[in-house]
Image (tube, rainbow, N blue to C red):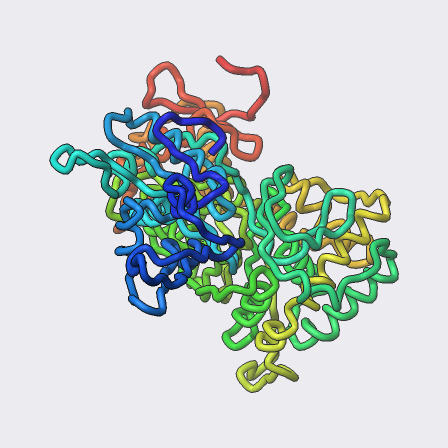
Length: 577
């Protein structure tokens, strides 16, 4: 605890039993683990026998007492010293009687800040296991933590003495739901393997990095056999690239070389994700089943994390997507996979947020509590004949697989996912060495900018271009070139309206009553504005009101004086009427 709270009694150099023995003037011998003394329970004027009190430890909170003659219990021994059982614990005591809740909350906050396993993501508290699993700290978890870390005491007026108690419910709710956790270490990512610093050197040290706000949870000795020299060269990077290509990716039917490059960038992303603020989602799209798309996703997932991870089906609504993302990210295994996406890949706002923002906030299921989670994980999806829609177009990098006839008969030369699980440290070190070698080289690589993904470009895109591969982001730029299908449909509507009315004014009523060209009617059908051969006036009015005053590929639908009247013009900046 960083602050001296008047109601908190800290343990001194001596444990409670030793301090009491000294206060009573009892003769004893002491070392770090135990105290040897004459047993006060069976001592008489004629005889005495030595007893041993073992001091409290983490696994034995109260200590133990043994006397070979009387077989007295620990409770009897403590009573003989005038101590209650709870007083034997070698932890701070917090006296809750007549203490304002805000002062208690400050003391609890200090306890949380001093813990090596409690962190916060935004305003939400998390507990992290030694394996690197992250779990939101609920009320029950906080009670268990506080009960282990300190002894809670209250004054019992009937007994006229202090007795053991539990942390007050109001205090627990206040701390868990508070938006401020002063001093508690904030984390934005969890590194489950060695990671590359901005200067290109590898960090092989587990623990909390306050500058990067990441927690490294891995066993260094698993990676040391595959660690390269501190100074890496381009030849080292080429050797690592050849290993990934020949040993890991050789059996996948990539449609083009740019898809192989994109898969390699996914490997680099999974290995570097803890130190990258934003990264695209990788969509593995194929032309048939049994093409290896799910296998490739699992393979990337194995690089991202040694922990078990689940593959989720694609939610069918924004509400369900929010719930799914909160659940997946709260259990932060390091990877989120949407397997076998069918028909379409919609741009749910919650998913778009996770791909560009460091934190995602959503209401906890069956409660009114808002939880914040880190989005610094590897996002993956797979499906046949699918493309990202809307705002996902600039957030998703597609890897296309083109299987030959009878793909179900194709076999990998080995169980590649099992191989990756068994050889994960080697694969991870090969991937991070490519990034490290490029950053150490200091060479400048020119490529098209990708707004919002600059750090990802430096660590996962430019290194591959540096080694002679095609730009991994090529398909993303193709997606941006052709844009969202909905945008094109709206553009065709404006273009056909311009051809029909020129600069003239028109209304929804005009469109429903006038003779329309085949092209204009087809554009209305494409936007699902025609039902049973008739234009739906309500839907048409809503659409025109929605897109009015927003430029679409050089054209703009302008409202005239009457809000139900429109005209289509060429968009010019500064021409606001």
